[in-house]
Length: 443
Ligand code: GLY
Ligand code: MN
Ligand code: MN
Picture 1 (cartoon, rainbow, N blue to C red):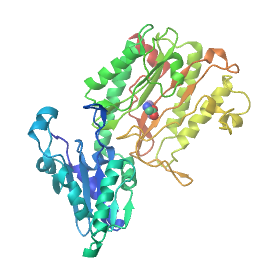
Picture 2: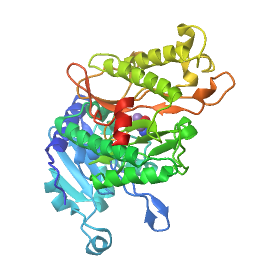
Picture 3: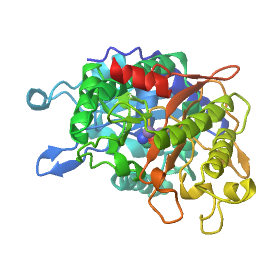
Picture 4: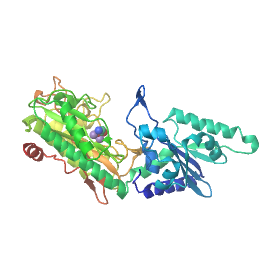
């Protein structure tokens, strides 16, 4: 049974209705995600759609939020009806009556009535606010309903003449987190921090990457997280140079680093932490040099993460530090200007060793909703944004690269809440300096 406070969700529906009114009014249709079969009668673990959750708080499958905005505003939830037998097999369903009250909707109906009711709701609405292209089966239902209204034109009914992207209207709202969202994200960050600390204790030569992944998952679930926010990367040695390594099945070797990118999802909100540490508890000289460089790049990016600065500035700050460091350490030769160049073939500059960006929005999705750039303008950061700061360096063996750096992959990733005058790393409790990591691993 729902124990959420429905008021923030109702407030978001009201804000969306204001934007709908400003755009001429009409009806918004926001379905949740479909269930997906894994094989035969077994499904992938169900995860609701983040936009649908954002405006409803409702996590059951087969649900649609509808907002009708003409002279008045009405919000409706369509959801699965109560069903004694299905509830014996699959568990509790709210059903429309309880859901209407628990989630503070004006009306609620069985999802079985949706296809019949949608044309009636669309008739006379100037706009339909719906995001096409994310769920073909649902697109077809909306299209059928639109055609049903168009076919009633002779009875004097008019169909909406514009389909507007409702997700694009919700994106700017999702970018600025409210106090309740921030509180959840702090708790998610704390659980993920505990998981990384546990992994540092568990790692030692001879253990397997999957054993360390198991420690991480244990801590997530024991902390109350529903699922990992994304597939954990547990990459020892050269595996760390594979950016999306998820096999997690190799033995850990003495003298190697272990890169772990893992974050839990808590109450639908993601956390996203990367730490890189020595399997045997002690950084070697070459590992130290590269680690300090990535840490300095992160410090520069964090210092640039504050309200009003362009989204891209932290990335540029990190790249500047990394490029200079690559020259100083002999990974690159030539001028700083050349090192800062991507180059036509993305060769010759820093990109060879640092081929991803320094961060992304974080929220309900790990790579959260929201624009980064509009036209030529990067968005300015604003208080309430949550963004990751995650520079790295990945050195593959090559004849022109000093051998002591070969196969070292390092990333350091924290989650930054943009505040009124800077930012706060909500993952700061996770050991990060060389001294802190070595001390924690000894403890
Ligand atoms: N774990 C996904 C990312 O860091 O972007
Ligand atoms: Mn990330
Ligand atoms: Mn990550």
